[in-house]
Amino acid sequence: MYGVEPKKKEIMKFVKDIVISLNELNEKYDYFIETMEREELCNYIIEVASIAGLKSDEDITEE
Image (cartoon, rainbow, N blue to C red; front, side, top):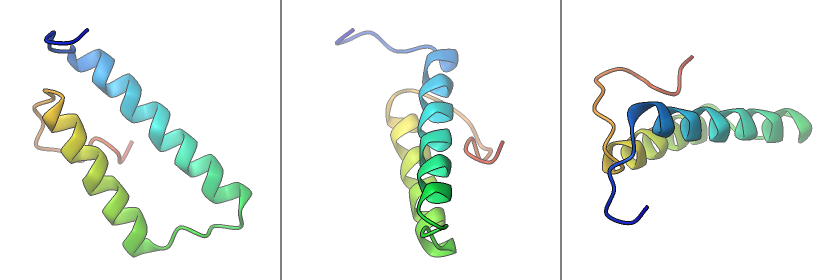
């Protein structure tokens, strides 16, 4: 898909998958992701989604 802009639905599927995976990892290892790290991870995910073409003013990782 090089050169093809992904659709919002596709980007949000990747966002959902990574957030769920991180949550599962965090739960498995006794909640090792602290608030600061969680906020940094969310910012990174939002930034990457934006680079991929997602336009949103809300926190796409919250739900």
